[in-house]
Each structure stands twice: as structure tokens, then as C-alpha cells.
Image (cartoon, rainbow, N blue to C red):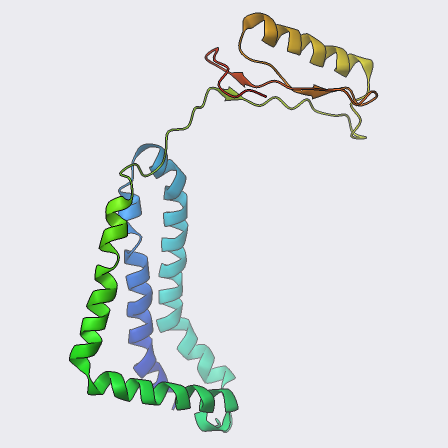
Length: 194
């Protein structure tokens, strides 16, 4: 029985996992920033799916032989299965009874995507201004930045930013609670007012 089930389900499971794996091939064609961003995801997903496909046809049937023992109850003994079969069976019969209508509804569903697809822009990932700088002064082990030296360094850095015209900064005197903001861009522009 386990052998018959494995022979029946194994190839379909393997092919479905293979299709999911192949669907990630277009991501490997991305170049530049998009390729660096999504390439690791595509490799990870591909390796995971390839491993799952291999397990589905090699390891799972062997484990089924060891773990599934004794009398296997029929599907109808489970109330959830009975409910799902009762709902699914009439729908399946209707779809099989009217195949042309089913194909027409499926084709219309696909065609409804065309109008929104025309409204989507051509740029996959917007350009990022990598000249932005975020400076976060590190605190000591106790998480305290109240030392005079740290405060003095923050004020000096603030003065340097203002002198060079590369924007303003943010630092906070934790004793008085006064907050000062700045935003700095590496190319000397101040695009982001604080």
C-alpha cells in the first residue's frame, strides 16, 4: 500500500516542486542592484526546493515504510475530510460538466490583469541615493551617553557638519533633553530637512 501511494504521489510531487524551482530562473537574470538584492533569495529558494524534491522521491517513501504501520483508517472516518469532500465533489462535477465555461472564466480572469499591468511603471527598483549618512554614536557598556566626552564629540561633529554645509545632524543632550537634528548627504546636498 505504501509503495503504491509513493508511486502514485511521488512523481506529481517531484514535478510540482521542480516547477516552483524553475519559476525562480528569471530572478537569476537580474543584474546590478536588483541582482545583488534578490540573487541570494533565489539561490536559497532553489536549493531548498531541489532538496525537497530529492527528499520527496528518495527519503519520504523509506520513512513511510518505517513510520506508517498498522491499520490505516479511510478518509471518510475524518470529519474534516468528509466536509471537504462534500464541498469539493459537487464543484468538481460542475467544472467537469461545463469545461468550455470553466476555460472561459479562467481566460477572463487572466485578461483582467492586462489593464493594471499597463499602469505599472517600467522601473523595477528605484535608484537609492547612497550619499546619505546616518551617524549613531555608540554608548558605553551601560548604555549611557551622558559622559562629557561623548557630548563634546557630538557637538564637535555637529559643528563640522554645519561648517562644511553637508546638512545638519541629530544629537540629544540626555541630561537636559534638548534635541538637535541634522541630515547629511555625502555630496553636500541637504535634501532631507530635519
